[in-house]
Image 1 (spheres, rainbow, N blue to C red):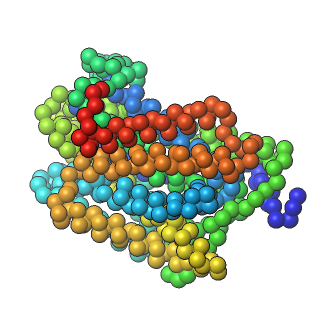
Image 2: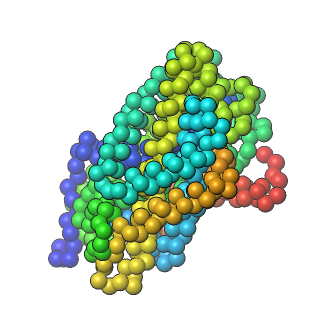
Image 3: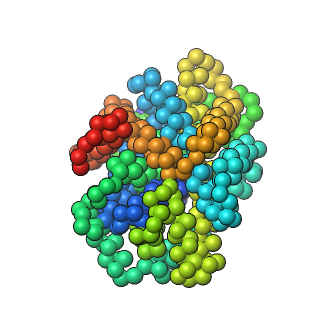
Length: 468
């Protein structure tokens, strides 16, 4: 073995791998799972459950191809793609900022919280939430670590509470509608109900999981956790808290392609697939199904559901009527807190994505490798906050509209990054580490799906009406 090559690390047990999938799942909790799919269920019934299951299944395969690259190369896909497509760093910065800078999730959190206290104008609550998020992420590692523990606790308490409500409040008829919806059969329709907005459906589909460029953070998590060749990578998470320039190395290491290393990779690959299957696909799918079931059982057929996120407030009212008022209030408070923690996690992750891509740009013109990653990270945090505050002050604050617009942009971003990662794996990975034929076909189908739907939605938005 050449001295410049590293040894492909020995695989670890499945128990030590649990972690990254919980993070990516938590990032999607406040958009598709809590808002968009339950919104569709409350207005159109459970005949669209198939879409949620197909969406998160698609994201499972998308995420695994992203993880594949990081396992083999020990670097993020951003670094790899930039080697082939130099313009990609600018695309990832712009598309991430626009797609996730629209503050729909925090607006939803503020609106639900305002409803609990009987406040009509929620935009100032949303502004205060944004400023609080910026403060938490800026003051340092200790406070953010505390907040992270609090939000994880809330998820561990809140999600089971919502699931129990779904089981208690749903009837046999509701469950039959759910099972019919898994195969695409709704109330007098198959797959897509009459009148459903394709933009809303695409938005929910894209947010069946994390969505947009957030999927690409899987490669960062794999590298930071030291999985596969990530064992040799520089761990840059701590550098986001450093106040001065630090020497940064974003590129991974090489290894010799031999039978032993191929065998080790296959063991890693089997383990990370199983971890992602259990945590992301199974728990994520179960979360969406039960949240849709709760929404359908409590609000389907009620007036006002189609207006913004009123269906969530209707849920709280109906839970209070069927059980006791305190349960409805607790439900709304938990939804608001879960949405808030999602916005916190999304803003942290998107700022890291943009900071890493900006660091790639700076390293090209900076041979000594010195970059103040912390300053770049904080710039993007407060730039997103300023953007959100400006939108709220301009009275652009309807949560559902902001979430859908952001999700449609992120669906197109997914179309782009699916193609880029597929090309990257084909060009950069040795043959033995590339996806098999069936995985390639699956990724091609997913790529074409997002391209097709994004095109249809774009044509409809510019006034070209299509029949469906």
